[in-house]
Length: 112
Length: 114
Image (cartoon, rainbow over all chains, first blue to last red; front, side):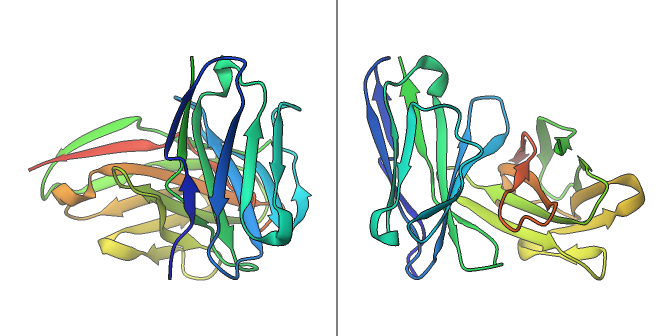
């Protein structure tokens, strides 16, 4: 089966610009998650979708981050406007209920 | 808040050496424990997991981990490493009834020299 795919693999933007990251989960996986790893720190939970609904967005750092999952398939994570501290690797994962998470390769975001 | 500590930031070994990566977590209740691995240029992959039962868990590629509840530890081991084991290893825990909100350690970079 195809794994979780993320696009782009790497994005370099200037402070103040907008970036949209995309995640395509494994087909049939209702659960979709976003995690983020800032350099030198832990991978941290951002939010969780069940189908198109946000189940838990307690990890979202601030209102510059907007995640959507229209139609319950792919998800986007938009950062607007980007700040320097947003640099890091953004991981997406998907799962079936009560099964381990399957992660994508991540998107490396660099804000200059 | 719960946390996960990985003792080593970077471990360098020669092939055939034995490996033990430390992981401790801070949470007093029921936990599910995981080790993930990220090979260069690849996605995070699940190496092994512990939910209940035998505290010695065997995973893929010859890895195993032992859950010691009294020590709040879940150390990863492999008796003989290979160059292909070069990767970053992450310990993670799920607790408090959540079945998805992983708390990760900072990761340990393992370099195996041929």
